[in-house]
Structure formats: C-alpha cells, structure tokens
Amino acid sequence: MHSVEYAGKLAVIAPATGKVIAEIQETPVHEVPLFYDQGRKAFDKWSSLPITQRLAFLRKLKQLMVDEMDEIARVISDDTGKVLTEAIVADIMPTLDAIDHIIRHAGQVLGRRRVKTPLLLFGKKSFIEYMPRGVVLVISPWNYPLQLAMVPMISALAGGNSVILKPSEVTPLVGKCIEDLFMRSGFPQGTIQVAHGGKEVGAAFTAGKPDYIFFTGSVRTGKIIQQQAAKDLIPTTLELGGKDPMIVFGDANLERAAKAAAWGAFTNSGQVCMSAERLYVERAVYHEFLEKLKTEVNSLQQGDGINADVGSMTFPAQINVVKEQLDEALKRGAKLETGLKPEDWKEGMFLPLTVVTEVDQDMKIIQEETFGPLLPVVPFDTEEEAIAYANGTVFGLNASVWSRDREKARRVACRLVSGAVVINDVIITVANHGLPFGGTKESGIGRYHSEAGLRVFCHEKSIMEDRGFMKSEIQWYPYKGKYPLFLSLFKSYFSEKRDWVTFVKSYITLLKSNK
Ligand code: ADP
Image 1: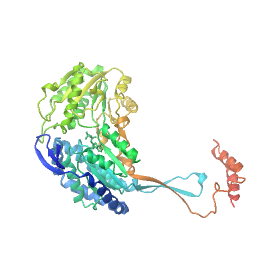
Image 2 (image 1 turned 90 degrees about the vertical axis):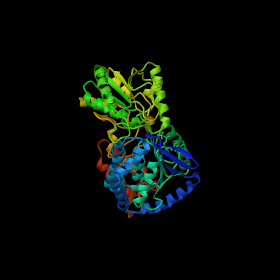
Image 3 (image 1 turned 180 degrees about the vertical axis):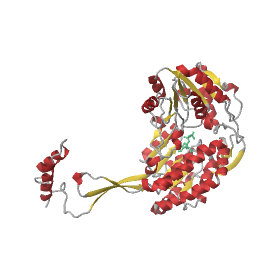
Image 4 (image 1 turned 135 degrees about the vertical axis):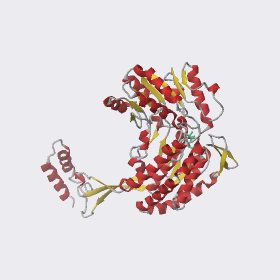
C-alpha cells in the first residue's frame, strides 16, 4: 500500500486494490524532543536489566507473532501489495528467526570476554565489554516493512538500548502493527516508540541527536542521513540499494538456475535490494537458458489471491522508474523477451514481468537499481568477462554464481566485490541470521545480523585490570638509567629467535630500578 498525507494524517491505500483501508496519525515534529526524553528515561531502566530479563520480553513478542502470524501476514500483504506467501516467507519468517537467534546467542555475544594479555604487560588481565549506546533511531523502508524494521530494533533492544522507529510512510499500517506488537508484549514504556510520517519526520528525528542511526533505504536518502550524522558525529549503519548480478556458467543446472532467476528477479515484484537484477549467461548455453527462463516467467500468476505468485508494486512513484529504464533500453535497441512496451502497460500497480536482452552495460537497466519486475539478460564468453560485468556497477550487496564446478564457483565468488555471494541459489544468505548482512560500495556501510549486528549497537569497551600490589610500573617515571635496559629488553623480546636470558635479566633489573 501507499499513503497520501493530509492534515497530519496518513491515508493508507492498498496498492493491489486502490482502496483506502486506514488512516494513521502523523507524529508532529515538535514532539521529537519528547520522544528522545522518554527514550533516555526508558534507557536508564532498560539497560540496567539483566540481559535474560530483556530477552524474556523478546520471547513474549515472538509468541505473540506466532499466535497472530496470519493476521500480521494480511496486514503486510494489504499494505504492500505483496502476495500472502511472500509476506509470511520473506518478511515474518526472517523476523522470527532473528528473534530466535538473538534469544539464543545475545547473552554470550554481548557478555564480557577475556582477551590474552601480552607478556610485556605481565600481571594484568584484559577484557572486552559491551555497553549499550542509548537511544537508537531505526529508519526503515517499505519493501520488507516488518523485517527491515524489526530486526535492527530487536538487535538494539537486546543490547540494552531504547529504540525509536520511523517506519516508511509508504507502508504505515505495518508501522502501526509493529508498534502494537511491542506494546502488547509488555515492553516498558518508552523502551520502544514509533514515530509515524514521511521524510520530514525522518529528518527531524535524524537531527534530534540519537546515539545511533540504523537506516535502510535508498542511496540518495542514505547520503543525506550520513551528512546530518557527520555534523553531530553520530555513528550509523546504512543498508542501501543493490543491483545484484547472477552469473550462470554453461555447466550449471540450467533447469534450477532458470527457476531461480525467475524467482530472484520477480519475487516481491522485483522490489528487493538483494535479488537477481542482472543475469549473465555463458554464451554456449545462452539460448537454451533464455528459453527455459521465458517458459518459467510466462507460467507465473500475478494477482492478490492466496495462490498468486507475484503481487503488485507497492509504491506508485516506482512505476515511472521502471518505465524510464525500460524505455531507454528499448530506444537503444534492447529486445523484449517477455512483457510489454511501457506504452502498452495497463493502468494500475501490476506491471508485466519483463525479460530484456540485447542490452549494453552502460544502460540504466544495468547500472541503476530498478525496484521493479525487470530482468536484463546478457551473454558472456569468459570467466574474466563475467567477473568484470558483475563488478561493473556502483553497488555490491549480493550476487550469485551458478556452476557444477565447485572450485570455479568459489573462485568467482571470491572475486566479486559484494557483501554476500550465493552459490547455486539466490538471495538466501539474508535468511541465515548467523551470517553478517550488508553492502560494499554504494550498497552501504556496516553489517548487521550475526554477532556484528548485536555488537554494533554497543560501545565496545576495553578493560585492563591490575591487582594493584606493585608500587610502580617499569615504564613509569623516573626514566633515569632505563633506556639501555629497555633497549635490551625489547631487542631480546622481539628478535625472531627470542633471547630469554637477556629478556628476564633486563626485566628484573628494570623492576629493581623501580624504587
Ligand atoms: P525507499 O524509496 O526505499 O522508501 P527512502 O530512502 O526514500 O527509500 O526511504 C526510506 C526511509 O527513509 C523512509 O522511512 C523515509 O520516510 C525515510 N526518509 C526519507 N527521506 C529522509 C530524510 N531526509 N531524513 C530521514 N529519513 C528520511
């Protein structure tokens, strides 16, 4: 769904039907300081709870989501136009699995860790501790509106932070649903707050000096947020766009690869940051593969019924982006393999599933994120060429390599400048919460999921402990007579073949000179 703003309210329009289905009150920007005050008060209490108690709230949240899974799936589907199956498989499941993963691992990942202390610092102990940052601002997008809001939220909450969420104004009903789920799970007041509204509201919260900003959305907005964050030196994670290549070698399982390409390109109507967005196929199997792909694509059912494969677009403005990219490609000689020319598209939010060939690497359809059901297919001749094509955009979020030769697939995966690579499958790394998630180049800064995704919301604090028995340390004042002793201490210690006798002698003499 998308929304129309009037008199401080967001009217929610279901994209699949065009009907107004709800109305949501916008958060006035003058309330921003109140949100931060509440968040900081709540932080004091929440951060002082033992982690097991914080995780108990996540358990309640998870059970509530399990109990109401069907209702939540319907809200997501109404709000985005995605089909119910995708709402449950690609939005709800990864959120539940993330909660599960965090419940299981957060205690250990965020616990105090002992680290080795070098011999030169004899007698001391070293530790790393994780201290929550404060109030974390999460700004989330509309394509996976549940997962991309809730996973950073629960990661931040587990570490002891309070959270302010600014969900996308394009899918405000899911934002409301998230707020409601947290409230009904009994989270203490102010621990999680949801601010509804558009980019002005997002900008006001960004300027309100949160302790951390976790942003998922477009490259354009990511850069604006990073500029504001730089002014106040606020640390950020930016999860931005992608233009993921799929490389199919001649020795791949072509049947499977064709099914994967159709799913990877058209799931969520192509409105996915990590998907199959550019398809490179080895020339020897190019025609055979293209036929299989077309058969697959032509068999897909678009609609909003329970058995539909592909839902509608979510955000009307996106339709023009898709149109523009396709227009440019067709004008420059590209060929439609499936789908229709933009002038023949029907009114509404369902776009034809479009496979295009005869495209050049400098076309928008290859270089820019589409966020729509548009798949360019390009033949390649050598491994080198495939790698150069794949690495030839400003993005680097995910990629896939298809081959029965495991060594070749791994070799190519190793050379792709990408936050993740999948071999003989697509997208799926995001579903393993144990793996870090994030982009290279303009696809973003930072990682979440995995251990990194819990620790990023904490100050990583180094602690060294001395029992305090000795009167002084060898490196303290006075320096008189110490230089030659340090010289022999360090030479004996750092030499390739360590001279223990000189080391111990110099050390003891230094200790003795420390009256
Ligand atoms: P998308 O097109 O994927 O929604 P956007 O980057 O436009 O990407 O939006 C992602 C999120 O960022 C939304 O919640 C939106 O309201 C918010 N947003 C947009 N502009 C700004 C801004 N200038 N400052 C803060 N948040 C913003």
